[in-house]
Length: 228
Image (tube, rainbow, N blue to C red; front, side, top):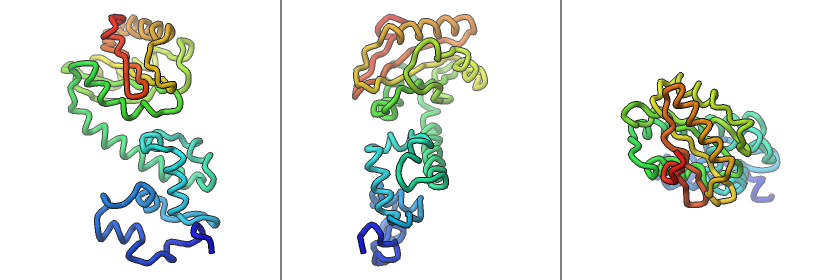
């Protein structure tokens, strides 16, 4: 019998992920094993450990997995709607836990904001526009992904951003987006979008504090560049 067709019951009991978690604690388990416990079962062709290993390998980093879409998950052989839903649910819980810890974070400089988003955004395969919502004391009160895909002024509508800010009673916002190429140099379109959002914010009374562009282990602040 091929190894990948073994079921969890074929593995000695003291070596199974769940039993190892009980005995030694979750921190000793690999990413594959933790995901296997969440998914519970594999497919007719592959046990859950091999399936989990393929999923983790496919996304390369946990940040990529955390931000995976339903379509990206279901593009993996063996992942149907039920398993995609399990993964999406646990990823959303992780995001909410992270957000709770970030809500007391005060933003005093571009580097403070960059420290919140760099690890989440620098390995993404497509462009994401993220909005950080702040109160009057510059403390984070919310974070949302607003747009996905190549950003241009025809699809980035300020009303979506400011509707979100108004609903959350934000006093100011910071927008962040990534360059999958790894080069954080702002494009002309990046600057145009920034100026458009800043102008709308001035009219509404919700200040755009900064626009961060995230590359590979680097970022550019348009505030530091003097554009904002």
